Image (cartoon, rainbow, N blue to C red; front, side, top):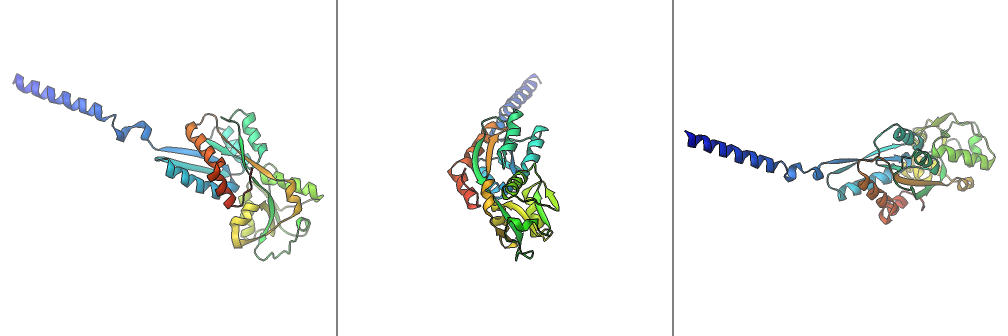
Length: 256
């Protein structure tokens, strides 16, 4: 009987040792645990950033890039309120300054691209818009709100042209402006060159010389307190590097 008890105890000890060793195996390796990586980016960056996100995921096993696209001012406010963000890409330097002034940047922001305004009208241009001055006529004009980068740029070109717009709506992102033009809710909207490009045949684009008075520079940085600071820097490097610049140029963005 004693021999049997000793055998059972030895077997139990071996089982416990094996279990303890197994707990540190590859299947439970913390380094291999899935990671969700958060990028907050201006709405106008959605298409190129989603493409870069897919590339980033393919090069980082177990990493999922989760994007939040909105007006830059909205994104900064969310980060200030504690939203989990690893990277922030703004459509202007003003909203990036809000982040750095609050001490929420983990590295010096880097300018990585530029964009300019263009008039967007529904396909066929039913309201007969020809230039910036046309936007002061009797039509439904949609623009971005002043605190949003595209809205600040709109104010700059308005002042440069000596005009005064009377928009029927001020939106919180350039995407919202574009959507109202493509749906026919607006006769015209002021959006970025890149937005007109991505809308394809749904809209017509009209250039105007005053746009050069309001070229938006886009900065990007890692966010202080990030759960994945190394991944954050790697994503910034991808965006600012040769591959990222080629993708951005393919969507109509300019060089930094």
